[in-house]
Image 1 (tube, rainbow, N blue to C red):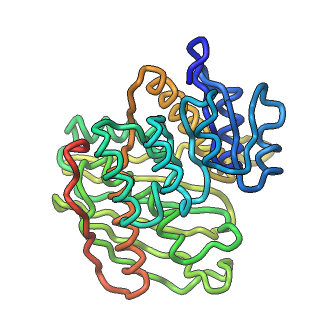
Image 2 (cartoon, helix red, strand yellow):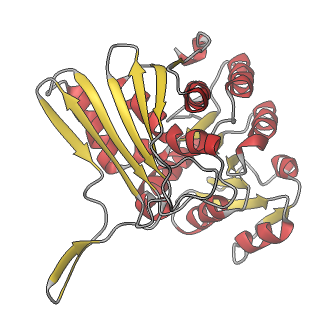
Length: 339
């Protein structure tokens, strides 16, 4: 609900991402307040909510949806539990900002798509935050303007200092490369139709059993191709960059991140340590615009169909990674709500 025009938001999931969203909503977002935090680990929820005025704490995620102070939901829990929370939020007519993935696989994502389509109106925005990054937004405007002609190729770099504990090879596709999948679809306005994965010798810095780095080749519905260097244990910093090669020019973003530091005999550019630093402004803008839209009774940004389409590409990517073969992306036709 809104109290004196202020949107009460429940944050479901109080891990690193959820706790950062609690901080953001409490300190950096106008028109909203954190009404509740839920996590199966109650102590973690209490830590995230510490210092937030009038914030309820729950250990049962679905319990927050019936809190009368809650008018919208931000889902930052692990992907496998998203479907249950999303379905319950849709049943209650609550607007949702759902961190990627919408769900971990295309079958469950399609169920969420159909549940929202049955309502006849959008309630869910998926948290593909790169769409709110200033550099990527400039790239999108340039591509849409047609000044450089038709985009032919995209080159991506996606590097992390190290992968989290327990990170598996399929997660490199579903939890990391998924951002590139959405970015390709958004920048070009084209669907990804096939995925090929090439795996060099594993880095000595990669955990045992994790194939890292890897190179992904994506084909699109109108003949563009994109390559993605995915290196999740590079050891030196967090880098995300994209270059669009078009008929009459190129454009690139990502090289400009980090302050330039000068000292005795040296001049260098600092590399962000992680995604929360690199995309801090994008997260801030994404959440602010979601809150603004929810207070107006509307929804903007990536929708459930975008989440489903990304999940379908992930499914093909995982199969391509396992088999070494080119794998076609299979999707259903979108419901009218998303056309």
